[in-house]
Length: 186
Image (cartoon, rainbow, N blue to C red; front, side):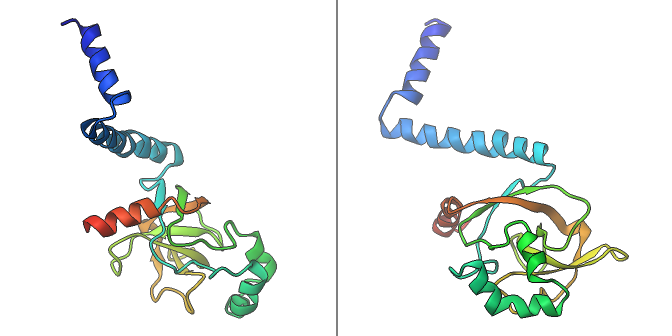
């Protein structure tokens, strides 16, 4: 058989065949392409090892409230810590996000109040996604808080633990990862 015939046979199997085996091969190919080409490529372009993360907790949810309602219920903590409503409204993703959203990250070395950072913690087996509420440049640490939490995280976050800063969110598509993880236990 010639190369051209083999190529056509493989091509037809992958793209035209409707068998279970073809579906399995397509799923495996999609996984390999995303895991080893797209994800690292995005990481290179965005300057982080974690170019996108699925939100797996409700710590940044605003519980279906619009911003005005959410601020009326939660704003006092921020005011008490020097963050006004106007400041908060200027923050990226000021309306929080939900479990199942995907957050696209970019690498960053300097941080601002209101940034949403993803960091590694010895207290959690997964990266944590919370908002910067205080910056201590002299110690290279941040205090962060989930919008839906009553208080900030009980420890300072060292700059070295930060994987990236939220650039924007894509709603709901993170449920694919969450369901896969829950079903497989991986």
